[in-house]
Length: 262
Ligand SMILES: *Cc1c(COP(=O)(O)O)cnc(C)c1O
Image (cartoon, rainbow, N blue to C red; front, side, top):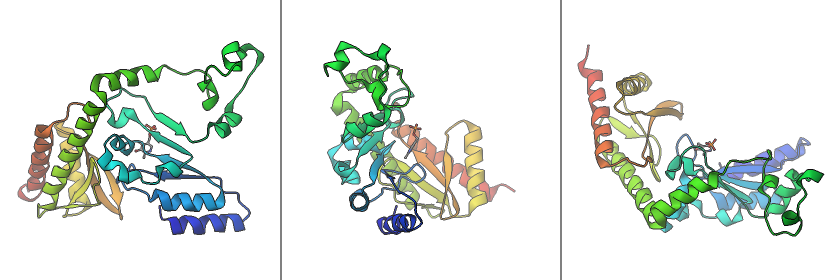
């Protein structure tokens, strides 16, 4: 997201009689893991009194490690923040963590208090009723499984795996960079590598289809600047160097088949 384009759009909306109220910036976009400039976006939001939400679904986990926290510089300026332990923190689907800087607006919007929900614990302020923080009333006990994950790995264990995943992805990016047939399609700040074969969309589609049919690995794709782009992500509990090495070997095998097969 470009802060100057955001500011221009907000002003155009206001001139057109619309009322902008919410901006969502992303720490690691789904498609290419792009990082939005949060502090500059926050400044635009504050000028116009807009709620700023940060979507850090996958990459937010990296903030466990101090050396990756700069990727979300300005996070303290956001009104709300979310990341998904079910994506890159070894927790079974589904489990998202949501923070809000000031809970009042949220509760004023969503709270309901019919007679049958009135109780002493709520009235005395002894408990937080999370039913007032979201649309539905009931919730599963997701925090229990997250608690077990955190207890099992500890902060240091979690950091160890996150660092390892980033290292493996960076190693993969290095192999791509040094191969004359492949290129990186976007910067790879963490554990997602967007890359492509230089022969064009049809070649990349063939490589991906054959790999995914083989069952040896699973790649997803996106389009960057109009070009088909392959995506390799390292983030699963048991992924090790040998898996990433094997993935790169299989990718190169399929690339060679492109030119050798009739
Ligand atoms: C995966 C992803 C989502 C979707 O998250 P869910 O909570 O699983 O629906 C949203 N935003 C980004 C940036 C993502 O990568």
